[in-house]
Length: 489
Image (cartoon, rainbow, N blue to C red; front, side, top):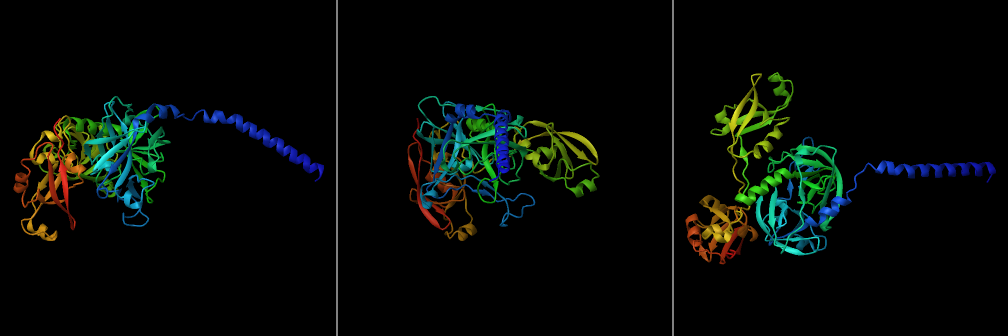
């Protein structure tokens, strides 16, 4: 090799080392602006729990929201992007065992053992347990649930004070802010991931969650992260990780969290009255499309166009009419129609709210008395401070029943005058037994049942501590199910 080539190689080596040195020295200046999450993790990991729900059958929650985003095709299309809720599946058990277990995450909100998670993690579970960071496993009581907000409130007795998270204010979040998730993706406890807030006030248009304006992030979360906390840089919980946007079932760069202010509003209601109430305006709305903008000579397509006004509701009494465009609700401007349901849902029934509308090119403000939306029939309702055992009769079983007509009986293969159908699950006794709305009760303690009156008569003597044996028909199968009412304390 010639000396000139060697000299050139030596010069390149010197330049490379010099460049490397510059890069090494320059790196701290770049990384110094990035946040250090270790303090948040150290201060809060002990308040995050692993949630395991066991079922006698398969989990009853719907594992996905089959709704495609605009422009992505219909839900049935192979290429449609699907919103999937995270049913965390255990890694080691066999596929058959996996059908009877779902895993998720949760976090402790009070030192006496109240824990927040997603409803779809524990929905209709026979038994729920939580595992703490110190490896203790505790049986959790489902205090109450709200499927509409996808919130479940659990309670454990740890024999002492538990570490808790600090609740923040999700309303102050802005796109671009750093956030952090702690949870159990794929069963890996205390996994930490980070990202930024991609958007706030994101309404997914899902039929079962129209009242939630989600926090959108790029934090990597997967199956098993459901119900886990989303932290801001101050170490405060600002959201509950709930859904991802995916056509594979796994993380693809976009995830969604329930704002913590929505969740805590639900928690307080579950504690105080056992269910969550939401406001009702009494209108059906749609987006203000381009055709409407042209026809009404509007400046833009902001707001919510009123399609229908329900008679007797606050909207009807206040004078809102089809064709009105709602521009703001209770002082908050509506950029799109999807912004309205979450605002109405968070309004306390009976409140008087100013609603600004546009009619015939003129703005006017109407005062509307907000009604109460219909309660979620699938919610587990366990009045705080009142044990189900304190009630006697059919109420202690935690379910309501309805009559069956003979046409429905014929479709189900039943005889005339046979069976009653479960209308709703209202308490943990029925929920933990795996019963659900739509199940048909044929017998109570070997006594044939054919009407609501007969069911009430058969359960009239149910007392705390007693066990009731039901013959239940689901689909084309019938099974005996025992419901044990907790003894009074």
